Length: 423
Image (cartoon, rainbow, N blue to C red; front, side, top):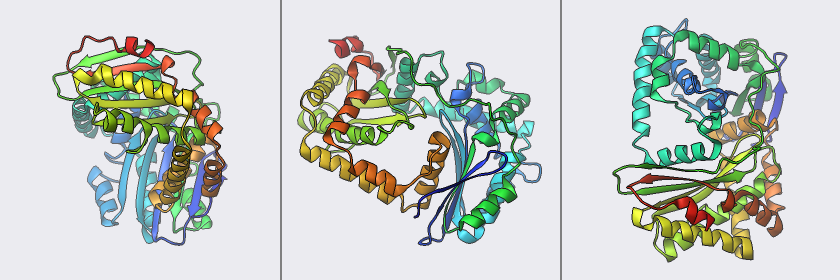
């Protein structure tokens, strides 16, 4: 894979192109700068609702024709919604890239939003809401985001939205929201694989340029955190596993310390040999699952720390986790941990770059979220240049338990977990 080339069209739409002559596949992803962050309490869930419904027919294709044509091409396809973006993608062999681009363009620029089809899909999304309630780890993570950002903030709300909202969204709601937020200035088409720069530009000009409204003044990126909303939220459920999440302020994608932060979190809680896993699970047997990672938005970030244990071990595992954090802050990481963390991060970057899918996403995210051209060599060199001091400072920035919010999902407990954190 070569480095990514960014091309900006006259309407503000951007192409992120990454060519590889060592594959026969082409990945095309349309990254739209709209997600649950753009919603208020009344529209929460609408970004995700639209993501589903663009597949439910266009002015020229029925829902079956959309998926059947993609299946006939042998293409893989899907979509997803996050806090800051909604994405639609295909992966196919190189000879089918043009047709995949045409279908992606059709569903995004000519959706019919047929009311009967929307009613059917509404039921599907409500089933997804019900299913998500059975994912107790996910419920706990949503709860800690609410505790961290605040219930009445866009980032503190769930991506899928509450059932009451999903039940009332109208066709006009969909049309208004889409026309306001699917803006060419905030859309990146990332194309990776066996396709030349010239052909990638032609595909965009043929199927995407001048197909979306433009608004250079639209604001969709997050603001840096100005205040903390430390809170403890819980949901008691009659389940065997106790789920515990901590959330702490971290750094954003535009911060050059992001490489150091990712290495620090990998050393601390990224794998089976990580400090957290070894202490909490291997040495003390207090949890089956324990990990930590940095989730970055454009200008802010959040460090998630998860412990999956039983209700009788919640306080002990949390107290031990706090002790591990304090030890790293006092004594730092060992030389071997630093080497391991750097090598793991370098390897992960290099291996992901061998995948059309990963490169498509990484290049698109870099362009959309940071307005940067993805460059593997640059990323690798930045990681290799990290010092122990860089990594230690990033750890202290992203793992500050004194600023943590906390969430618990499991059988009823009497403990105030915030008192454990602050003790």
